[in-house]
Amino acid sequence: MKIFNTLTGRKEEFVPLEPGKVRMYVCGPTVYNFIHIGNARPMIVFDTVRRYLEYKGYEVNFVSNFTDVDDKIIKKAVEEGVDSSVISRRYIQECRTDMAAMNVRPATVHPKATEEIDGMIDLIGTLMEKGHAYRAGDGTVYFRTDSFKEYGKLSHKNLDELQSGFREIKVTGEEGKESPSDFVLWKPKKEGEPFWESPWCQGRPGWHIECSAMSKKYLGEQIDIHGGGEDLIFPHHENEIAQSEAASGKELARYWMHNGFLNIDNKKMSKSLGNFFTVREIGEKFDLQVLRFFMLSNAHYRSPLNFSEELMEAAKSGLERILNSVDKLTDLEAGAEAGGIREAEEKLCLEAEELAAKYETAMEDDFNTADAVSAVFELVKLANSTAGEDSSRDYVRFLKSTVETLCGILGIVTERKKEDLDAQVEEMIAARQKARKEKNFALADEIRRKLLDMGIILEDTREGVKWKRA
Ligand code: AMP
Ligand code: ZN
Image (tube, rainbow, N blue to C red):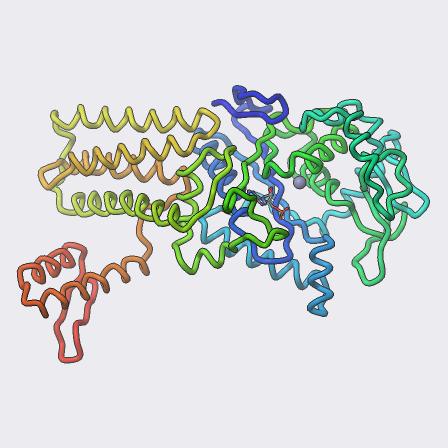
């Protein structure tokens, strides 16, 4: 299996630190509002990576944080006149709801920054002891970037260039910095803000130290995969590396994976630009499984992906093609007599296996889900053209379970939800009523028969058509 590593700029063979186990950390959202579909991209991408690793037999320990102390959360709390924990708790809950609707599984652990302050203080203490951090006059603690020779190795920036770039920018309140590229580990409290006691001053942690401390606590000093959106490469991940590696003397993560942006009109979707849709808004128009399918089928995770309703509609019909095929196989399976694969079907099984292998080859190549989805479409085509009423039950079962497994790795559920089925039944009943009105009794009967095949019994009553499951 090959993974593109931002650190080396190359695709590399994946070798975990401990055989059979994967330790993986993905930076999670800052919880001050509903998540937008740009934030949903890393969730979907890394959930898929995790599912594939599990399919390959790895035991995956997956940690993803919630940033629940931040200026934006505090601002929102002030606007609403509530404590900032009210805001963060509310949006963590909403985020979990959205994740479930996109079939993004909860991580093994979702630590919250405010519950991990002790670990951050310990880590900052170690950095102070080793001379990698210093306290300025106002109590702010900074990381001393000059003390970490490899600073810039992830973003492939040169420290000297960085320094001259930063030199132009004078940030008020940061006059105590020794060097412009130094960054905050701990900052003094401000009136009305949440704060914690520390050896340096009452205050709160900087953003970057949070992930270094949580990753260390839940996964150890060295992990296999660290991920997030590409906007996190610099400064966030660069700073995480500096903090963790300066403190431990060990490489923080073996593979650094970054997803490309979800764009609108080729501009990054972001709260600050105001060009965003929340996952909740999209959920009003589409089943969120369609959003997931759209992300995985339209682009490689490292490429930018433009969002549009047309592309979502296309994803919806593509997904429908797969689900219809599984519906057909389910019906055939129910109707078929018990029996093993026939000789003529053996060749077709091999073809299906080849397509499953093609899918795996795509996934092994840095998780090329777009190509993997193409293999699923080919499999569906094979199923639609070869499975019929005279097929053996085992052949139908084999096709069905192969499609289900391959979709399951992508987090796509092929079994229709009850409410979707209900909507489909209602639609078919309406079509039957229309046919009857137009005196097209042949069509009306055919629809009734199809419904019966689906286990739906119709009753024509004086109040209209009623239906029940057989
Ligand atoms: P934030 O809440 O801004 O820290 O973002 C949470 C995660 O979403 C990070 O991994 C970001 O890189 C990612 N992210 C934010 N906006 C986008 C976008 N438009 N496309 C892809 N990923 C994004
Ligand atoms: Zn992080």
